[in-house]
Image 1 (tube, rainbow, N blue to C red):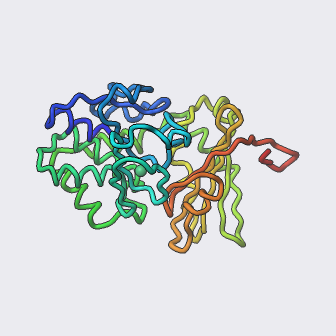
Image 2 (image 1 turned 30 degrees about the vertical axis):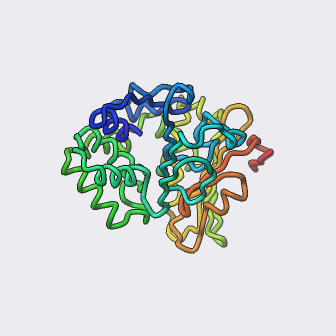
Image 3 (image 1 turned 180 degrees about the horizontal axis):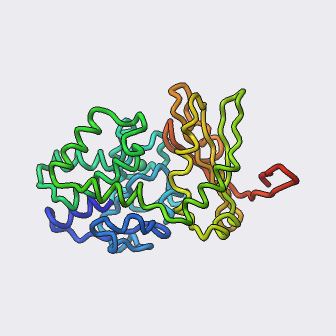
Length: 286
Ligand SMILES: [Mn+2]
């Protein structure tokens, strides 16, 4: 979003507003234009609305599925790399083989033949780095590395990205991860890894919801694991589930879809109205 913003405002002199639902993790405060993001917007005040990296209306945080009947499909542009797409109206630029939405935007900028500043390059490389788990997941293709190389050529700061996303782990976050990893259950027969985060855990560790980010990837590093599931209790009795797999034969997007969610073949999630309750020695989902 920030990379596209940089190009549209600087090279095309457009007036662009930026909106993301909820608090954007402060770990990303190193990103250029970060402080221009607002947490709400009125679509009718803009000529065009661009939705990035959201496979469904609910994922935007601003609309729900009822909004599918919007009166302004011609003003809507969807740029995304999610395999399961539920945003029907509008102009779609979707490539589910791309590592990230940033990679698609990079290709778009190349096609426009406009200069890429180091600010824009840093934003886009952050997107690629995050979505590939720092080039560890197998959505990292030759084109992904070529795009990343181009971004570094344009002056992207890999150092800023690495210390922002991967090294910036607070004590609260490390304590939370310790707690959740200590609770991990591994089913040796079916090769499944499961753990959970409760609201009480966050409170005890002094951690916030964005401290959960990245934890499911670490849980999924047991060799031979078919898939990993991390359940986390959100406020208002909602339970979020995050699936990860590195197994080519497993499609977690399909699993997530069964639970009303979506995502990618190897990383997907869902949210359901439920809560986690400890019953004796066993955790139960109610
Ligand atoms: Mn993405």
